[in-house]
Image 1 (cartoon, rainbow, N blue to C red):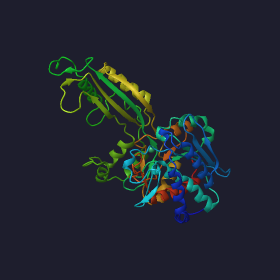
Image 2: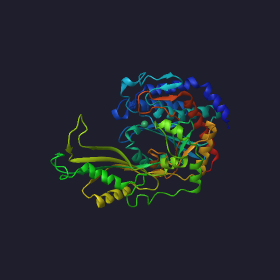
Image 3: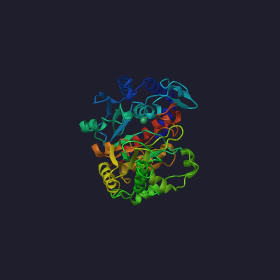
Image 4: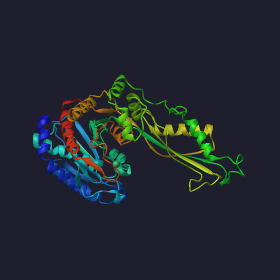
Amino acid sequence: MTNREQIKKYINKNQKEFIDVLFTLLKQPSISSQNIGIKECADLLQGIMKKAGIENVKIMESNGHPFVYGDLMSPENEFTLLIYGHYDVQPPEPLDKWISPPFKPIIRNNKIYARGVGDNKGQLLAHILAVKTLLDLQGSIPINLKFIFDGEEENGSPNLKPFMVKHKEMLQADLIYRSDGPLDSSGAPIINLGGRGMVSLELTATGADRDHHSGNKGNIVPNPAWKLIDLLSALRTPDGTVQVEGFYDDVRALSERDLEIIRSNYFDADEKAKTYGLKHLDMDGETYFKNKSVVPTFNINGIASGYMGEGHKTIIPSTATVRLDVRLVADQDPRDIFNKIKNHIQKIAPDIKVSGEGSFPPSRIPTDLPVVQAVIKSIEKTYEQKALIFLAAGSSGPNNIFTDVLNKPSISVPYANADEDNHAPNENMNVDLFFKGIEASCNVMNDLADDEPS
Ligand SMILES: [Zn+2]
């Protein structure tokens, strides 16, 4: 088998060619929400995959934008890896904030600037170019590979679950692997073993049927803003503990190994404070990693009532609304949590209206799986640095779809730089990290062959 040094050398030698392939992909807009260039990009991707040596490449229709599938199988291989990525991008607006045009890729200060370079074309391409690298060097890859590339991830992947259910046999694998998002701001690689779920809610308090004069009607007409504030402070204590009955009942306990992982993660409170734009962060590492992955949140993401225009308008507003997102952790069930919140509110503030705005479940795979250990070891060797392991990513990706439908573990390992500015103007990917991503995928593909998943 090819050793790691040879892989590194090969990537070094082929840097120009790899950048050219990436630029070709980046020049093709593929804005899913505006339905611009999707079909063209799927065609282009199909060609790039074939050229890299991936077989059975096809564009597969869904109820929305198509998926691009491909595989590379051999009866000699025991392990099958399913790689997920997405070829659609966010809209580039506001255009005047871009230093160079979003679909004209360019390298400045060792960074490639283009819409979609980090999210997700550069990361998706790293896996494809890893196939080319290994085939050129070794002639074969010691595990089976399947690729599924989504054309509407930036729209929330509405067709991913039905597609996976429909093609469950075709997509069956031992592990699902995904690279999206950035490395840690310290430069350390990150390995996510799950993702948080989410429930979104809107609460509306009402008073009179119209706004009233706060002098003439003060103390007479009830103020819905106060109703809402009183309710919110009854739902959560100042230290962040949620007071909803049964809210924590299904939160999965942490094993000794889980705690070990959390405690061994590197943490620098000052560096994090700087990254987040805070004066200081009063938190130790253990609390930080627990809060980010295994503790549910109860967040106010918008609140509105009364008059906030110029000057003062002395009114008692007639309505007040708050929007909440509750990030769930394994094994909280979104519907159950929504009902618990709704029931709790009905008990203490029955006239406040509660509506649900969508949800999805959390996921978290066991830390002691051999395949998890194999990926961690492989990544740490590639980046020559200890990885930060999140029992679940703070944000919510499609992990739960893979674990639910295929009933197999799913891991995400981001390849982009912490300041990739994805979704924003001047999206970029560090050139070295693009090549490092190819190397990481090569090594994971080789190293997983040594592992016997259970
Ligand atoms: Zn994105």
